[in-house]
Image (cartoon, rainbow, N blue to C red; front, side):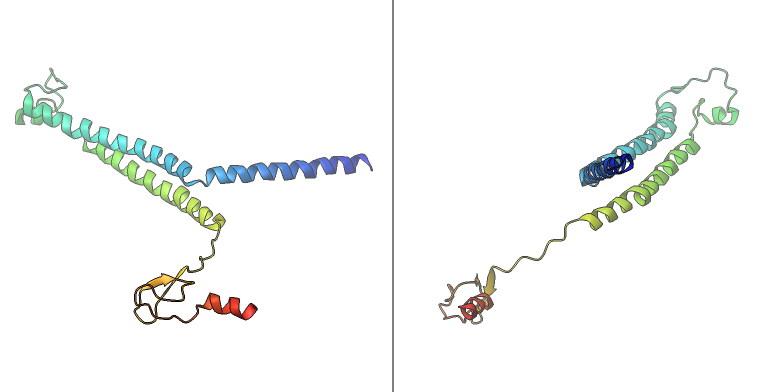
Length: 176
């Protein structure tokens, strides 16, 4: 065995071990709760910016106008908004552009997360999900009273009618 064959053997074993580790990583990532938690944290941070913008840009100036003559951010020079000061806003202003920016950023973040994280991960989960075969029925209906009875029953518990053998019982009888 040459040196090249030895190195190739080590390489093949390393490749198999590495791919096995990636399979474990794939299982970890494709667990629903990992992706849900990550998406929740990112959406929560983006929504926090929207709520902070609403409070800072609308509610705080409104409270300043309604409750105090000078507002929370006093403008002693009275030169920033002369028309607003004449109307009684006392240096308060509604920064609706900042709030709209936060709302648009939230919507774009949610859109990007949905199309670049949620949909691909859902498709991968569906692809790698184990396909379960439908379970065999354990009950059947009585042909006389239409009540649900066990599959192996030979007499109905409700109407006491003698029942024909089920398909499973016929198969067992045919094998005997």
